[in-house]
Image (cartoon, rainbow over all chains, first blue to last red; front, side, top):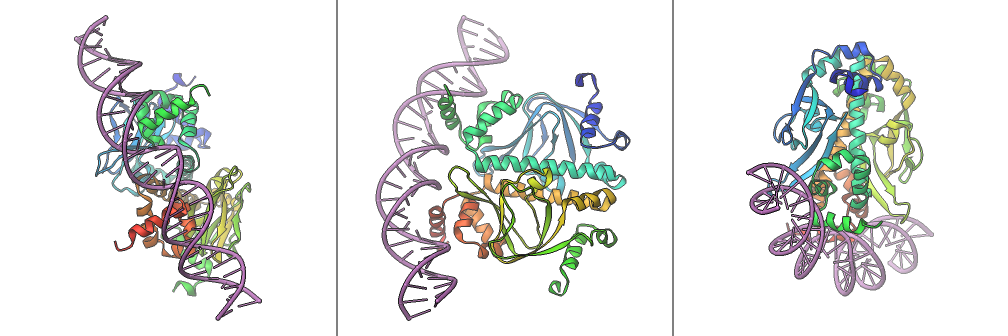
Length: 198
Length: 198
DNA sequence: GGATAAGTTTAACCCAGGTTAAAATCGAAA
DNA sequence: TTTCGATTTTAACCTGGGTTAAACTTATCC
């Protein structure tokens, strides 16, 4: 079904589920742009101010930080199909971004500029509501992620990721997953070894 | 200055800084209620659905989780003056809460019921914007908190808390702070010992 | 002020996970 | 195929924080 629709139709449908009326959505039609990312391309880079809100049509992105002393990377989050991707803190406060956001596979994104989004917020109660719901959803996701970090073992989180996000799991090498879980490569190997036969 | 104002005036001022016009704010006047909490009282408890959004006039609250196997408590966040307090995930999704929210000192809260807040969202573009800004602020706080957890040492976070939130620091015993930092009591003692003389 | 409870530090032991480097495996390209 | 580079696993060692319990300090209340 969905693959027959254009990208904009897909977005309209997704926002419709969040309660947005088609007429209100149509206000935004002139603003959305489509961009193709190749594996390894960056959606946003360190020290940029993030000016766009993106909607992942398909693909996988990782958002990560680099330790300026040691040069080590640490993965914060992954984004995939039908999620809004942005370096959200940088986007909200329009401050320099502390992360890199990199495509892990070839990906497709619809994006809108923050100025045009703010215009829509001012014009339309419906769009203001959209902004609220995006923010609430982002909150919910980060909170759930943080709770996982605080209250679950890396082993549980590994298993969950495998089960609930197989497309992410399959798109990224294990050492990125280890980093996301907050552990080192050898440690993930030990976990995987322990899990065999369970 | 502020202590001459009523609690509602304080809230009006704070929301005014976030861009809310007085006339829009007045729509909400019939809805806010004031509640006094004694040290040890709960704002919200495990398994309740959180029905209210609170605004801390003054006081300190901790939000924590209890491991159902071991009975251990783990602190997630602290709230203090002029912050909006709620078990936000439970509030947003209207699902059973996984946390306890407890007053650490005698505290005063203005609160509004979610149904009345939703009414305001429907009636008023300004209030919808307020909802967006509250959500964005909550996101920003949790994200910053999570980043601290991921990218800073407990020692750094301890120092920051002492410097930036002295009122929280002074209101809660060290073992609660250790729990918030993700470490055990003896470990915090070791950190404090190391810090002497620096 | 002395007794009791609450909070904090110390000491001793232990171990999961970090670190490093080498070995094994996988995969893409020639 | 074979080869080379990337990824994953393994092994050996080591450290920092967990754990427990006791000692110490501070606060509270008769």
